[in-house]
Image 1 (spheres, rainbow, N blue to C red):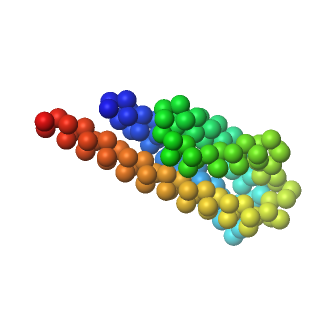
Image 2 (cartoon, rainbow, N blue to C red; image 1 turned 180 degrees about the horizontal axis):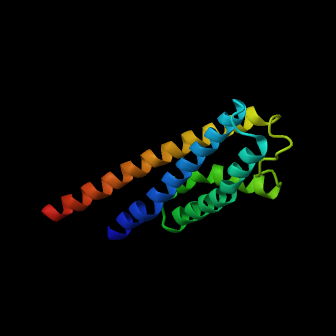
Image 3 (cartoon, helix red, strand yellow; image 1 turned 120 degrees about the horizontal axis):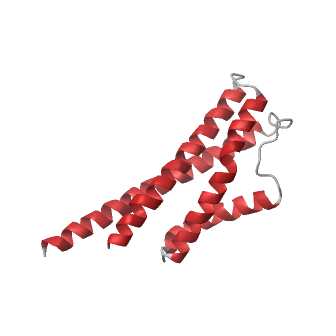
Length: 142
C-alpha cells in the first residue's frame, strides 16, 4: 500500500505534470510562431529543448508501469511511447528551422493531441491517488 502511494504521488504525478507543462509550452510556442510573435529559430530551439527529455521520461514511465504491474496504464501509454520511438529512429523528432512554417499546422495539432492525452493521464493519476488514499484510511478504521 505504501509503495503504491509513493509510486503514484512521487513518481507518476510529477512526471505527468511535467509532460503536461511541456506539451502546453510547445503549443504556446507554436501559437506564438503562427502569430509571428517569435522567430522560427527561437521557437524551434525552445521546442527542441524539451523533445528528447520528454521522450526519455515517457519511455521510463511506460517501463515503470510495465515492471510494477500497472497493465492498463502501460497499455494506455504504449502507443505514444511507440510513436516517439518511431519518430526518434526516423530522425523526425526535432523541429527543423527551415521547414517550420510548412509543418506548423500538423505539429500544432499533434502537440494539442498530446496535451489532451497528458491531461487525461493527470486526471487518471489523481483518481488513482484518491483511490489509494481512501483505501488506506478505510483500512485504518478497522
